[in-house]
Length: 74
Image 1 (cartoon, one colour):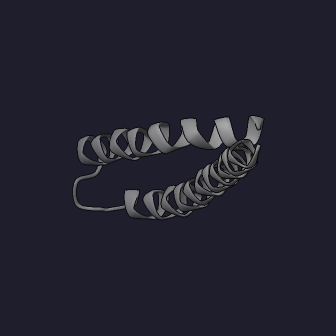
Image 2 (cartoon, helix red, strand yellow):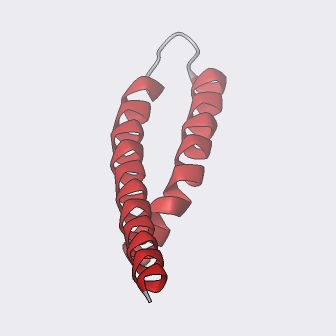
Image 3 (cartoon, rainbow, N blue to C red):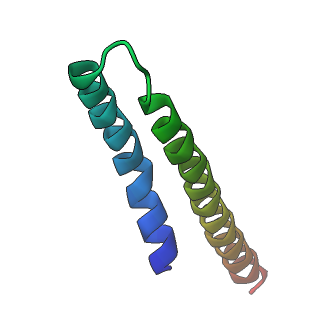
């Protein structure tokens, strides 16, 4: 569960980090786009975090559906 919460937080923080790095790139070296490599790495990590969160949602939704089905059968 802790991993899922960290992944959920990263879904918000990751794009903010990329935005901050983009601004730093513009201010320090506008002719060189080194930020693209950081954005690529953070983007891959963001997709992995998104998949973790979606997996947790599917599991929780499945458990809720199972509980509703068992409750209805009574």
